[in-house]
Amino acid sequence: MRFSSNFGTAIHTLLIIHEYTQTQKVTSDIIADTIGTSPVLIRRLLVLLKKAGFISVAPRKEKAGTTMAKPLKDITLYAVFEAVEPNHTQELHASSIRLGNRCFSGLYTNEIIAGYINITLNSIKDGLDKITLADTLTALEIKEAECPHDNPRELFADNEDAVGK
Image 1: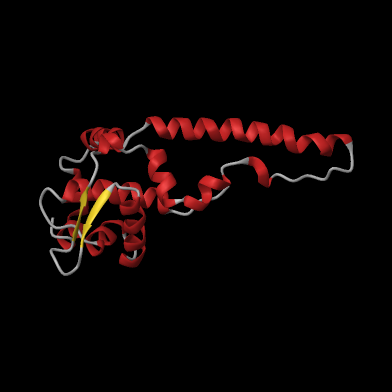
Image 2: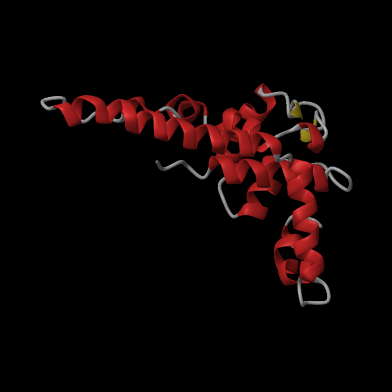
């Protein structure tokens, strides 16, 4: 089963909003620049993330910008997945398995494989439901500390200058 890049992009977006709002106004242009994608794609994701209650978005007429509406510790990866992949959460069932039923094997294989797939998908859901964005941020900080470069953020200095960091 293939998914769009929305899930990973949404996680990155939420982490950027969490980090950047401490020092600057966060807009879709800034987020898009850190990811290397279109601000239009980011705005579409922001609508979904706002609908899920993860973020607040100030109207353009005011101070346009995005802030976190929930702490990272209260947002699970599965909740993010559900928010940005709404069509796929319904597809996380094995009902799409359809083998021929012209013989004994085909008649029951659908049911058996569907059961296996549902067990596997439930394991994935349960796993993602236990991991929060705060856990992800902690893992990111550990990776940054392990980086052999004295200041890993300098590796992306050109990008950070472009977004005002």
